Image (cartoon, rainbow, N blue to C red; front, side, top):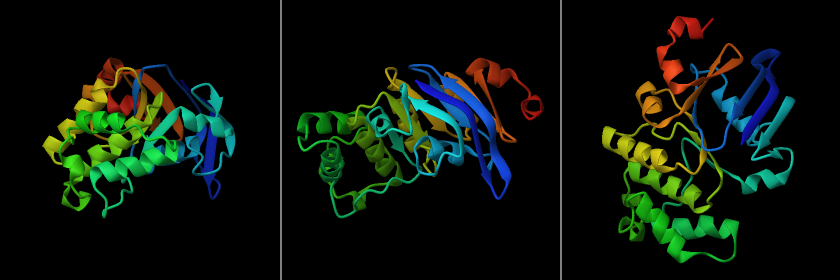
Length: 222
């Protein structure tokens, strides 16, 4: 579902991504792991066309990311999702749904809000929401799009333990989606992911989760 080949990206002649290749199969939940500055955001933003592709090829759902069609199979939840504070949860959902189609499915909006435990709270203005509720609303929006591939950038960042557990439970339930999730929380990765893509010194190595957990950190950095 996600195929990256020979991807390189440099800033001021310094290679952040050095000829990396990564293949993520359908229905895998793959964590993208690396130190701060390792290039995780660069990789994700290049995949999504938010920064120019310098070298290599990227296919998402079998479609080159140079073509606009790939957007029909991918949804992206950034670390901070820009919602509209003067609107309710339901109104935010309707606005983002309208970007997909003029025909808004009210039943689907209700279904996704219930999935993220915001059924009743959907009628409230989101200025009353906690950070965890806002993050769950962002997740509800991208789930409304029903894309085959979901890319998540630090989806539990800044959440308390309860909010974190709620987000992880939702992600774990998405067994019919292919997920790439940037995270630096090892316990979360172990809980929800099937594989890990470890990015270090411009190179990437993919492991099954059990193998990643058994490999010494010093070995991973070599």
